[in-house]
Length: 333
Image (cartoon, rainbow, N blue to C red; front, side, top):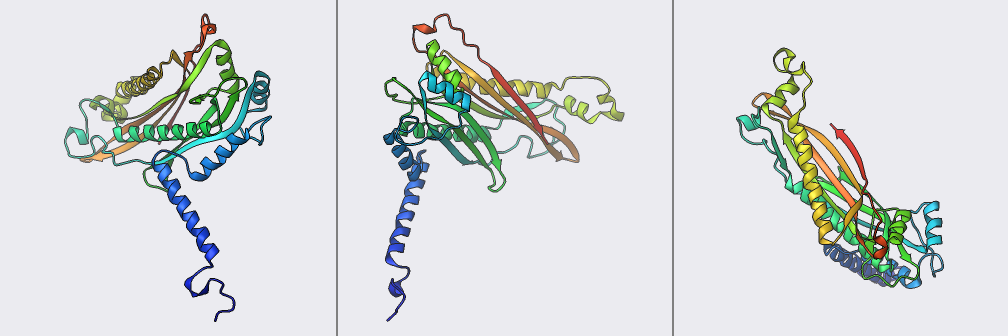
C-alpha cells in the first residue's frame, strides 16, 4: 500500500488531473473560437468583467491605455472616458505563390521584350485576410467592454522567420466611452488620436470604421529597362539619365489597386470620405538567373489604412475635413 502516492498507481492526483482536463478543454474551446474569427476564452472573460465593472475613471476597476498624458487630460475634460487597451491580432500562413517568369525558357526566363507587372494574388489575399481578422477581434474586444469607439489604433505588420510563410497583423488601440451618449450597437474603430476623434464628434462627423487594403505587385522589367540596368555594351546603356518606366508604371498600378479597394470599403460603409490615410510602401529586389542571363525584378507592397467618416449631424455643414497622407517608403534588398 503506497504511503505517499495520493492518487494511487493510476497517475497524478485527481485534483491535478481535473485541472489539466479543464485547461485542455479551455484551450480547445479557445482554438475553436479563433478559427471562427473570435477571441480566446480568457480574453472574453476578462473583458466582459471589465465591461460589467465599469472600467475607467469613475468605474469599478482600473484601466490601461496607450493614450498620452495630454490625450487623457483633454479627453477627460471633453467627456471621453478610456476603458481599456484593446488588441486584435492574426498570425497567418501564406500559401504558395508562383512568381512570373520562374518557369520555362525564352523571353520570360531571361530578357523580356515587354515589361510584366501583375498582382501576386496569394500574397495580397493573405495580408487582407489577416487585417480583417485582426480588426474583427479588435472590435469584439471593444464591444465586450462597452466602448463607443477605439481611438489611436496603431499597427504592427511583420513577416516571421520562425514559421515559413507566416505573416502577422496586429492592431492595438484604446477603447473609449463618451459620457452621456447612448450605448453603441457597434463601436467605431479609428486610427485617429483622441483629440482628433473628439474634434470630429464636435464638428458633427462620426467615424464609421477603419478601412484598408493591401496589395503585392511583381514587376519583371522589359528588355529596354534591363538594358539600362545592365549598362548595355561597354556601359553605354547607363550613360544617360532615363526613367525606368516599367517600375514607375508598376508603382502607379499597385497604388491604384490599393486605393480603389479602400474607396470601395468606404462606400460600403456609406462614408462621406476617408481621413488620416496612411500609405506604407516597400520594395524588395529579386535576382533571377535563367539561361545564363540575370535580371533584377521588383516586388512592391502597398498597405493603405484610414478612417471612414460620415456626417453625423447638421453641425457638419460648412466644416471641411482635409484628408492627410503619411507616406513611408523603404527598399529592402
